Image 1 (cartoon, rainbow over the protein chains, first blue to last red):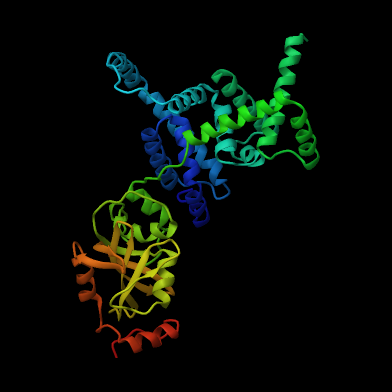
Image 2 (tube, helix red, strand yellow; image 1 turned 120 degrees about the vertical axis):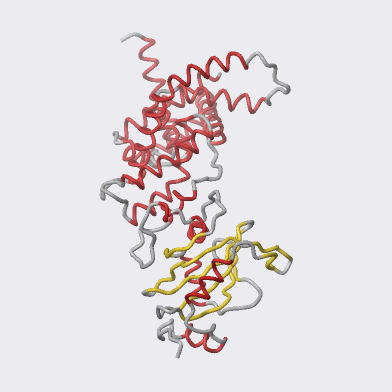
Length: 162
Length: 249
């Protein structure tokens, strides 16, 4: 397992947009998502994948694992950053965000508060437009579980945002 | 089981049904049945709209922006593992940013560019390869590729290794390149690419200045076994599918 096949390479390029959105849904911001995407693609190119691997499934897993590693390594820095934010929050903002922006921010917060398994299922279905069968394949779970997670996620977003 | 628990289960089942409706996961019969319910149950219809609205916010939140890959990674991703002569053997040698441009343009992906010019042998993008295969050289004017980029084949010459080579210019929005590709075993392989700068006019692009094209000129000087083909010679070799041996005779 030292390289990816030509077919896998092509599939990975096709998956890039979805992988990017997946990165955004994991990290919650575009800058981190950019970095995560780089690391994910680089890791896949470096380490390769089994010849029979499902490219999307493999890529999403690699991506998630890298992010979890990153979160662990950020723990100390995060605590430091929290202190910084507390200080910076005393600075008044010059303009009020629009209602739409507030709504998006609210949904973003709620989305990141969802259990990871619900969030990933929802993003893959509602944003990526993947079928339940595809998501089941990607996440290696039964279709019924996908259905349940998607419904629970939507319910949580709607009920907590109202 | 408490009544509240029963209601919760029922609510979850309804939410699943709504999700399946939104996601197009209902069978034909289920779809019809649900459509009838929607017409008769305003609360259900309102719930559907709430779900859809939240989906819309999610999509907006995660709406696709440009993919910006580190050029070295982009090159590795967009370029098949080379089994061709002259391929750089070390890791740094693979960071051939300029050459990646050709491949990436063909992929329709948007990447962040670096500014270095490099040389080495790599397979070229499909659209560019097809253009090199059939287009005659021209002193002015451009041909538009499927991905919207513009190409001008500049000249054709035989290399010292007995391959046919073509100099070409490639422009896509602000990214302008000049390069040479040679034909090996039926495939066009980039030998050198360099950033160039053309100014767009109503009639197309014209070259504004040669910024970093010395490497291209140097390559041609060093590798060309003869002068460039005449238009007639080039037409003949293109018509033959590049089957004639490239020699200086």
